[in-house]
Length: 211
Image (tube, rainbow, N blue to C red; front, side, top):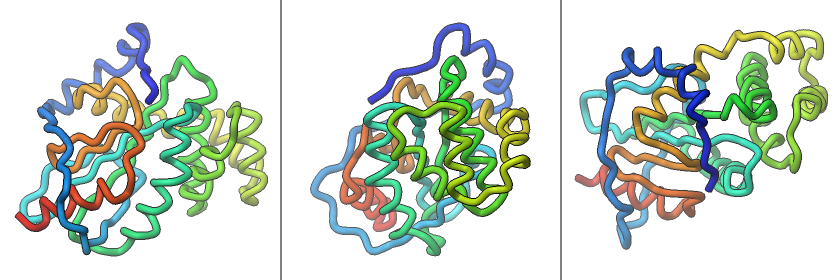
């Protein structure tokens, strides 16, 4: 797992904390739960999810790029979740990309994902970046070319601050959730640390759906 957030960087996101006002105490992972049968909606873009009334289960994934466990999760587990859980409305799932802005590679990778989303290629870009051993602004640019993105528009997006407010808000929310390493998954108030097998995630989701 990767640790991140310097004291200098935290000053960037403090303004967002007052807007969020959300806290929670995670519990340990549930073991030996039944095999799940439900699917999820994965919503990659937008603000932190708000609590909803009803029986929906909230799944929050926090991850970044440029670390072994992050890439292992992004290449092996995340694609399975996207493929397996697309289209069902029993669960709200949200991926929070939370780079350390002290790392140029992570910042440009996160911007690259959101810029690619403008052309409906969010997941394609995510998977390519997780499969790249040494990310950089140049590598993100090349991956955009591989995906056939309009290169001038994509480069302009990478160099802009178009999505920095969204990124900052999600990082601030991760701080409120007391997350200091990635990848991490919350299923309601259950915390799953690291690159958990898909089966573990499914078991916890199913536990809440069956309550």
